[in-house]
Length: 186
Ligand code: AMP
Image (cartoon, rainbow, N blue to C red; front, top):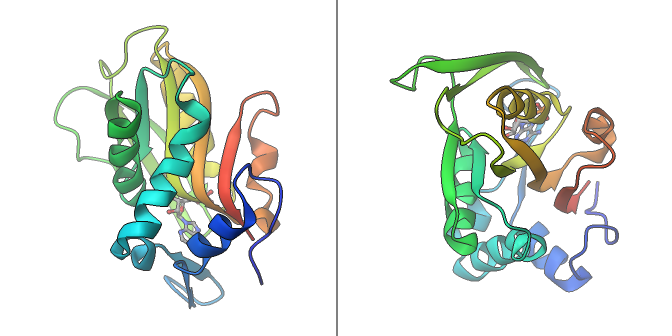
């Protein structure tokens, strides 16, 4: 399947350059899943820089207070984005990793079930948060992230991913009135 060429707010040449650095790995982590491997994109200085710049562009004047990023690959883009937007960084982690008091949310993945946790004091009430992950698949991860952030009393300004697997319709689980940006859609 090829990368979509319209509809995500970046130009086609940039999208094609980024997509050229996302590798399909069939049957990982289990048979039937085509894993979108972003490590070639990370390894290429220009592609990584252009990716982070494109993720940041819609948010530069939006008063974002914190990036909430999802373990593990979301951390890579999220930390770079927090620097680009001069915001704080809040990790949404796998169970048992955060040392202080946490809130948690369970959800289903394309290839199994999972749980995300956040420190109970990680966000100030009313903070404007941008959620970051590498790939949007069925949408369960972003929904869990949104629930956790709302339970902390913060507000969701939007979400951004590098890759959206549009054929899995994860976007349908995201509120239509909250921006969800994807640089590359398949
Ligand atoms: P989902 O909750 O189904 O939207 O899944 C999104 C999460 O699972 C993200 O954190 C992705 O890193 C990971 N993920 C799910 N499917 C894939 C895939 N085909 N390739 C790479 N990562 C994936």
